[in-house]
Length: 149
Length: 321
Image (cartoon, rainbow over all chains, first blue to last red; front, side, top):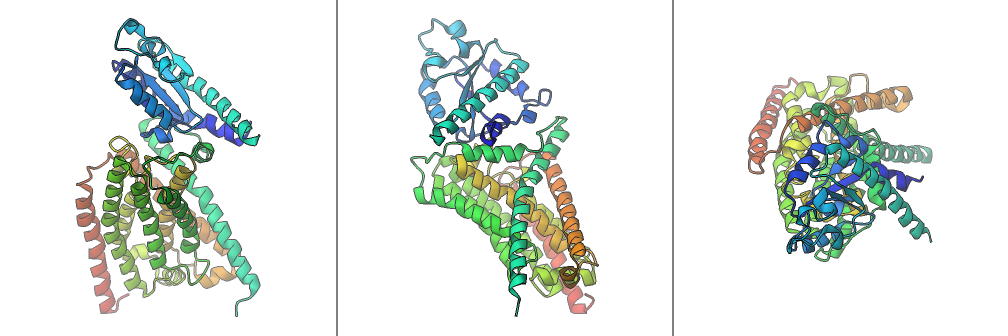
């Protein structure tokens, strides 16, 4: 494992996006980054700008208004990047599965990690972030191999 | 006059100083994050965290925003980094004509102003507001900072770091003569390093990192590095110009290597204490509203510095110091 992969694994900067969520997942995300779970010891840091982020943490079912904005934010994040869907609404469409206003997260951006639950427990979010770190490392390794070629 | 061997040794010392400060400044920043975590009752990041962050940013994709001014967007991080890595050569007494307080003041101002220009170059509304705030903070701290430097000049009669170190060795550390000035200097550190009570320029909750918002990848790494460097350089500068112990004269250190090593250890120790003090204020305070910070600086810090300047002038006129 080279320096590149190791640094990507140990430094996760998260941009949190609310795609028409009911705020329950937001509260659990804040609980997950609270002192009790302390993801900073794994290198997790909440950043204010998508340009700095490695991981896009999305909660909510994503309605038609939010979809183009979410797409834009996703495109603003520099490669390599990972999308984590938090909550049942973001994973499937949840109780909104037959709503005319809901697009569904998967149809807007490619999602890498799904964290189910309504809302998911903070430790599930932490576990999801650990999985995302592994995926980010793999992606960084892939980018490194492509650059070498 | 000077032998080429001595010049080579000095260049070697300068390179060592740059490497040392370059490696130490992420560590100082990690210390700040760790203290913050301890105050919150958390475990905090491991010691390599800041290095991992910087290395990761070097490998990230570099995005040029469509709205940004292309030349300035590329130039500003590079210039900022170049200024930052030249600062250790100025602060440590290596080259006699380079180690000058005026030059250091310009170098430190340069890093801040380049950050302001970097914000303007990205042409994002949030960055421009951040740049305005950063410019306001430059105006805020520069007045007390320069008054402190002027009082040091009046006290020692020189702006050269070599002479200031020797003056302190002969007459006792300057912090004894300028306690209020030292307090004003300490007050300038958080705003220069954009730490918490005065982190109004890169307020991540209101302005989404403000000045740094559009920067990604390598450019962000360079800007962050310059910013970290400035924080540590300020701590080192405080240690050198305020707290030098009696037996560390320049002539004694030039001939005695172990004494020079002792001086370096003492300077690092004092810088460490300054970093810890700034970290505690960072962890224990909340961000001030932008319009409240100037009042604090222009009234409290400037008055502290000015009172000490007047006292020093009077002592000087009376011939006591």
